[in-house]
Image (cartoon, rainbow, N blue to C red; front, side):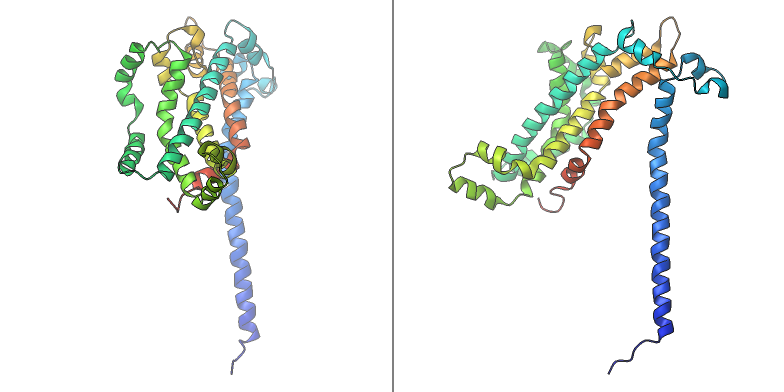
Length: 296
């Protein structure tokens, strides 16, 4: 025999549940709004400064001239003597080349570590993961000597190989986990149907490992696009400078004069590919980082 709870007690529990739900919604709204402001306000401020003349930026705040917006900064950087067109093109070549090469090599290595069982496999994979803890700045001198010996300094190809080497361990880790999360029965069925290993990867497994591959490509692209120390070390020809190095030269100015409008506009130009790619591939990026988090 069951005894029903008093109506007042049920109402109390209902009101308490509604109050907790309302409190959680308020906390989520406040937290989300705070995070939105933290990430958005600097971007909006940089955009605003990039379309203001240098005289307005360095002068005291004046409501009469604060909103005097102009695109002269972008016009000067894209067509004037301080043009960044060549630097942007060099950065695109390096970033795209690094993303493509890193994704291909990481996919091949990740498939090997996930599917092939050999005695030294765990040790080699542990070494690959351990190499992520060694900053390349600590081995910059031997890296430069090695690349100079191979005649890869002052070369965008050499910079692509350098950036690929730095980003490859993370890519191998992500792709190994992506392949480990895919059931092996899919490959067994494809092998029975006569498909080769390359055909299995490109046709059968490709839709399942796309989040991981997109994560590797996005990570490698952003790392190569923002790479400064390596580009500054291995490149001495001004015509080969990438965008971060060119922006530093722009920041130093001529004869001690710095145009802060140019710097703000150059920073916005550098942000555009990063923001666009991250927004476009965000769902793949999150899924790729989560792939293999439990299994493998």
